[in-house]
Amino acid sequence: MVSSGLLSHGNSIAQLISSYGKAGDLESAHKLFDKIPLRRVDSWNAMIIAYSKNEYPVEVVNVYNQMVLEGVKPDSSTFTVALKACMILQDLEKGEEIWEKVVECGYENDVFVGSSVLNMYAKCGKMDKAVVVFEKMQRRDIVCWTTIITGFVQSGKGKEAVDLYRWMQREGMVGDGVVMLGLMQASANIADTKLGLSVHGYMIRRALPMDVNMLTSLVDMYAKNGELELATRVFRKMPYRNTVSWSALISGFAQNGLGVDALQLLIEMQVSGFTPDVASLVSALLACSHVVSLKLGVSRLILFLIKEQNWSLKFDLLAPAKEWVDFHFVFDRSNWNVVKHL
Image 1 (cartoon, helix red, strand yellow):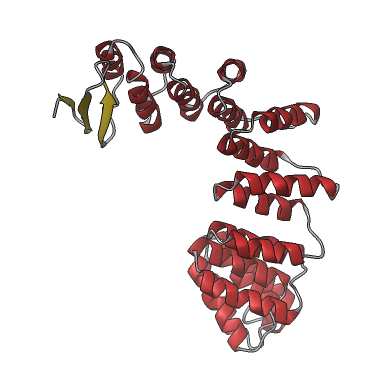
Image 2: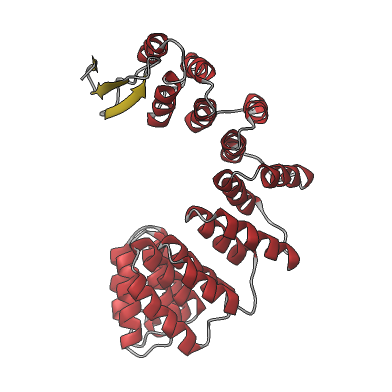
């Protein structure tokens, strides 16, 4: 293509760069890119997107910088991908520099660019700045709402997430599964059973798909709100469970003082073919402190210690006699040791 003189045909070159990028051949893509005598925005975007799809965020930012230095005006696609790279790199300073360029070029109301900057602020934990951008947006799609709501949830600000969801409802927007997942997590964080029931009911009425992650979040939400009967009901109806599902219910029983039930679930988990993870073991250890016979609880737990991980854990357990007993659980890939009364 180079010898045929098609380097002057921008669309064809951009498409070829994209093809190289999709094939993971970034070296050929950049060699071709470097040979273009007059690079248009579509060629720059093709190179930037190629790096982004192959998970090279540093190179995305480098090509963006080169583009700006050469005086080429970025467009919506450029800004969207560049801001995503800053999010991945947690480079807030560069991200805000790009956002200034966004405003300068008049793309601050573009929903794709807006979603990218919201996501960047959310991932960097700067929800105050995310809200400022969000409130100034003239048009918000479901992606923008989802980003800001889940951002607050992930920052541990469940109340703010719920307030935003209610604002979203007033705007006539319909929440999708991702929003519902965030709201369930918010309900668990702020111990709002009514909200959790409302979200669950909404999902059933809307016939939203419930995969293992969604159902596990329901179990976790009900368990953390003390609704263990509902948590168990959802858990038992799950067509498929994973380790996180088991851990969520075990933790719920342990945290609500039902140590025997938690330990029985740990046994059932192992019998069902699942290997307990750190979260399961921590919950089981908590359960031991609620069992009348600590010895019984520990003996059951030891039967299912994980041998295939390289863990070193220390927990303080409150014995029935209200004396503190330290247990060191040391695991390696060849054996395990339990040292009592250290």
